[in-house]
Length: 177
Picture (tube, rainbow, N blue to C red):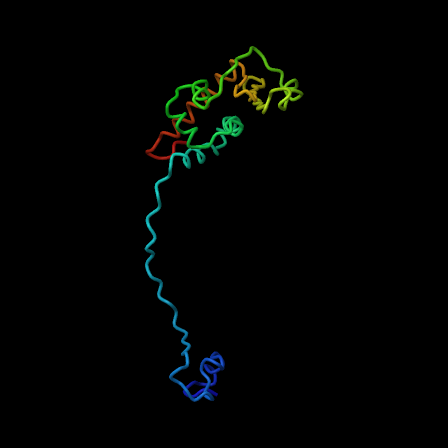
């Protein structure tokens, strides 16, 4: 038994730390059950959200899923796309700032495009959008020659999407719905 401790408290003390047999009490560690006092956090305040972080966060919203599908195939990072977005007013200008040329065709048959996927066919990605309002499919093709092939209806749709995205991206007074 350890000197000065009741039998109940002596069980909680480990033998090497507070042993009565060692005789040298000055070199022994004393174990206490005091809880540590939590010091106030000195962490710096949270950093304001950066434009690329805000761009990625807003792009994750369900309403911008079609736009995100096209952006994912462009192969550009968020800071580059933010810079292009700030200085443009249309989908075509946005793609131009990113180094893409736009080819506008009257109609694109989605199924025909899949057979041309790959370097031999020239198509890098087929991005279909099934628009329920008009019961049509808006197809966008991203090509290996840094061009985007699409239809006038697709351009109108993505112009509206990009304008709504830019409004939410530029809104600093809070998160616009």
